[in-house]
Amino acid sequence: MVATAHTVAFEGVEARPVEVQCAVTPGVPAFSIVGLPNKAVSEARDRVRTALTSLSIALPSKRITINLSPADLPKEGSHFDLPIALGLLAALDIIPPDAVSRTLALGELSLDGTLVPVLGALPAAMTAAAEDRALICPQASGREAAWVGACNVLGASSLLDIIKHFTGQCILEPAQPGEITQGTTHRDLRDVKGQERAKRAMEIAAAGRHHLMMVGPPGAGKSMLSGRMPGLLPPLTPAEALETSIIHSIAGLLTDGGISRTRPFREPHHTASMAALIGGGRGAKPGEISLAHNGVLFMDELPEFPRPVLETLRQPVETGEVMVARANAHIRYPCRFLMMAAANPCRCGHLADANRACSKAPLCGEDYLARISGPLMDRFDLRIEVPAVGYSDLNLPASGDTSAEIAQRVARARAVQDARFATSPHMRTNADAEGSVLEQIAALDSETRDLMIRAADRFCLSARGYHRILRVARTIADLAGSENVERPHVGEALSYRLLSAKDS
Image (cartoon, rainbow, N blue to C red; front, side, top):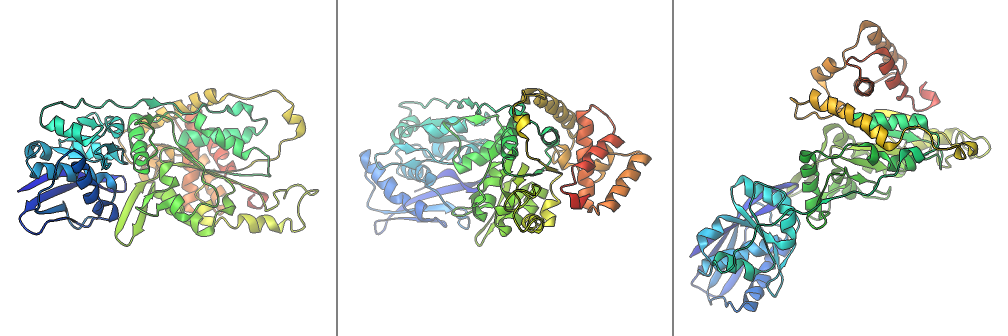
């Protein structure tokens, strides 16, 4: 007899349906799994056999063949244990085959039959909902999967509970979604003394999701400013929270099935490898840029990152997605993030202080920042210098707006953009605007256009740089509540493209 169960195989954030076909036929006793399984899947036969033995279920002295279809799709992970066990139980007529075929299952089996939580329950639930199937998974994973309201999620603690459910002895209760986790309390931007220009640049960056580059001496407050960016951003929308949580589910970062409305903030160290930053490694897991999807990616000491690692950022920053290419698979991950970067002006960090600068100044500054290629630097919408704060300023009382006040202005600007791009699903913020849409929302009068043309000639702007200035100017106008992009908005946007004296 041949019985079928259903599960998924993960390709990036996509859960592809897999049919588990189980056949028990006469012949030399054997237990084989075919269909391109990896080592973890092949070892499932020992876990399943031992788990069934612990439940006093003896396998017959026949040939047992498990086929994972489609056979040309690589199968990885221990979550195939449960569907293999259910398919085998259905083939032995211990549980109803029809009931098993109407569900989608995933879970790892312990040797005593208990279920161990697995990664990817959230995208698996979305696939189950699309196929109009119920999802059976470990109890701990059920809280995560239950966020997909269109799917009936059943969480079980052991294989015995599932057998009782299918035989009608004890019906499993639907799983309940986990709690909405609260992010850490964000530090207040008002605590940073001075740096008013940097605070203004951060407000613009948060409002339009513009990439921000800060250059300044050690101790100027670059890291302090960056750490306060999450407090300026609006909470994730339900759609964004689901997108982000799917990636974190694949990476195993969801705690107790909870979903967070707080935008992620990732800060990889400059020793991070290319696979850690972009994605890859064993199983082509998502990298830091994908874990920062819909949030902030902060790269401190940007010139210290290896040059090949930095260059891989150029395409994801533009497209909002990254393709992790391997010999046997091409995995696509979303990575639409706000990139913040900080750098010292030179290796010693005191280029502007003649009393503390090294003997190689000023040439050391050009050599140091030259580690950041021109094409990558051109992708930063806002590039500012963060000067050192004087001792007298440190003794002054806190001044300026609080993070909450700035966040309100950012939220109003984001609301304007939500309405603006309501009919353009691939655009969410001003940073995404392009083509005719950008020309329409950032239309300039003749005087302002002349200013832009003169600036483009004077500063040798690339076409990318020209359009990025228009996007920033549109965001500045949104913050000011202006319907049109006017000359002061363009002038302020232009001022953020001048990184150093040599650019002016």
